[in-house]
Image (cartoon, rainbow, N blue to C red; front, side, top):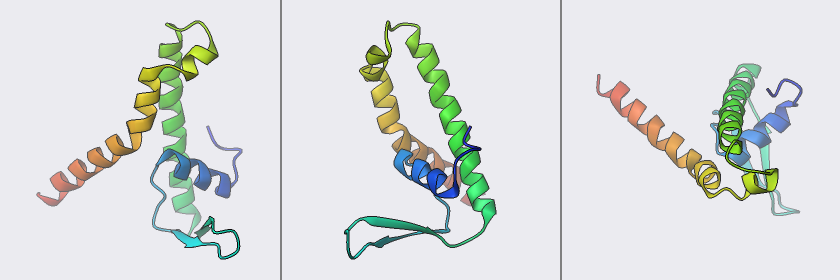
Length: 109
């Protein structure tokens, strides 16, 4: 899990993986470095939700890697595995599509 991670580390990990960030995150441009500066504006409940989402995501990826690693001889092969790369690359788009379908069904009732 991600229990030992700080709130900022959870935020960064979710952002890098394309996971939902919650409404409390704002992106602003750092004038000096030109980088992105993510800041937390609201409560711990959303951070806890992000921790749960990140934990579930990491568990899912771990299960996929464990299953896929049975077919591969080394960690280097695992990193170069095209199927795993494609899954990880497309997860944010898959998640977004499923979320849209869920909200369309919910709103049409």
